Image (cartoon, helix red, strand yellow):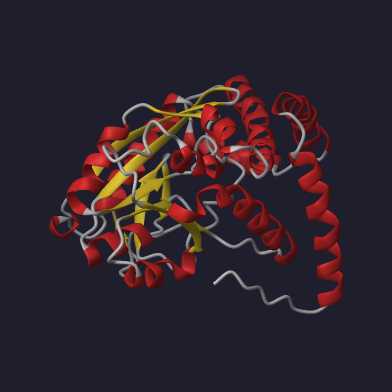
Length: 321
């Protein structure tokens, strides 16, 4: 499942991987406080020197919050780049950090909400956006306060991920993710998004919690949602799986309280997906995500090119939520 087909020039890709990954691994061994110092400098380089996707960030913010003044958008943008740099160094650090260190970064306010669903139904789909540090979800599997028989101690944690377009960096980040997730290999794994449905079908006899990022773009949407003042293509993978298999859906809000401190809150979207109309689950997800973003505006991946295409309401191939 995790094999890679590296096309020509194969040798060059292998050389780049053998250079980049060892260097990043060495950096991951540094103390987190030192990495935060590096992150502050990195944020300056990314935003002021390279101006990484500056136009995309400002355009997304301006369209999402049309009532805000320019200086307000500028402040959010500045805070976003600091947040993005922290996500990068935290993800790198997590690949080498101990489980006890990792759980200190993530606090779950209401674990009983998800554990009640899992204990009653056996399986659950958890949907979330690119909020907080989505790469630290593995901390949930290592938190001794919630990995108990009372909650979901014997449930597998399955985290879906999407491959990167660049083969070298995809392999690098897959290696980093696997290094971080090695801590809970006995109770979970990561699965590429395209293979997830097949994985779910073959593990229906297992009590599992499937974590899926659901605010990604999709090239061939059937559903369009009003999200952040824009017509947004809906990635309906979580809804499709839940309606097919009858798995309850829970929303995960990942709030960045401060540097190195994330707070997770669960909200049940539906316990009976079969009774939901097409698009209802996705629509509720986007409304919850939008509320979370409005409460902490820099705490989302604004550099992502989500709105590449405009959608016409007269298009009979699409359903508008």
